[in-house]
Length: 223
Image 1: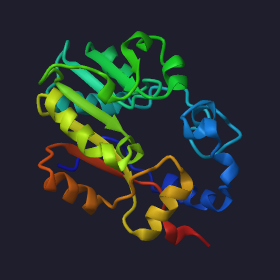
Image 2 (image 1 turned 90 degrees about the vertical axis):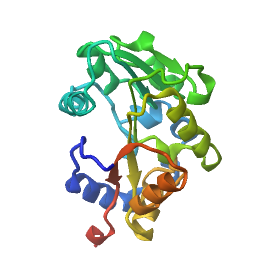
Image 3 (image 1 turned 120 degrees about the vertical axis):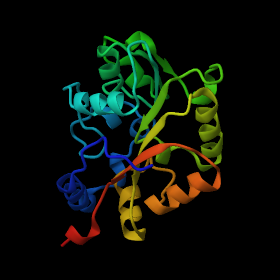
Image 4 (image 1 turned 45 degrees about the vertical axis):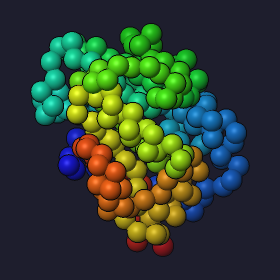
């Protein structure tokens, strides 16, 4: 089911589209492509996060998720691709038992101090969890960064270890032009699909989850 936990910003999408004209290959350094300092905190780059600090922006989003999924204190929450943990920490603040996974050594080393010890370095496939272990699993802007050949394995594993409540925030484009700009904006994107293609993919493989789509760029604003 499509849900709207995160506030959509047409203005941000328009700004990214305009900036796409200034994107150069040099911006995607090896460190950037490996989700290092250049990706998260290099303020000279307008691609990536260019300075990713905690500001509480996900507090209301977390409150909505807790209410919608009927989560209680002590519920086991897993965020896959949690980066520095700025979303995950909000679940921790309301009493959840939180777990985080990220493949970026830089992000894990610079994670929020309150939950740094709860975030593991690696991929989901590197971890061992029991069946139906988590009350809620989420990912934010992760799925398009996976390799195509590992996507099905990833989905199967999330279903195995969850109790059925799964949410993904997914970057995408609604047409070929938007998908091209999505890749131009951030070369770390590996899977480029429209919202309809994602839904068809989930249905084809009987994957039950909730989702929200994020349009990264809007070609019509390019002059």
